[in-house]
Length: 102
Image 1 (tube, helix red, strand yellow):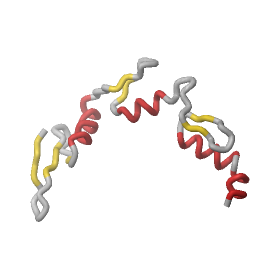
Image 2 (image 1 turned 180 degrees about the horizontal axis):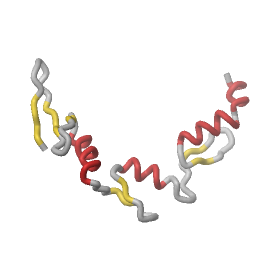
Image 3 (image 1 turned 60 degrees about the vertical axis):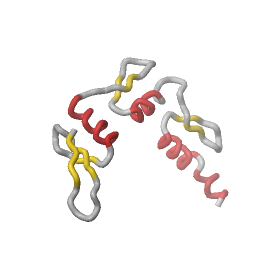
């Protein structure tokens, strides 16, 4: 990892990817990016064999396993694996309820 200072009034150190020279302001962002080059997948699902480059991708994957549905409809109680699925459900199934609440 090389560090280079910007020129100009603000002196901010940038981190540079040694593989492609892309620049980052935060070490964590560089580390995540570097995994694209190295293929490293440090986050493993404890329910199956899948591995992931980021913890957020692991969490999203784990919601797909049976029984894990953390997003609940406040109107009918139906549960979903993903927030976007809950949003679509509310729009399609409860649009009349939403109109009457306005």
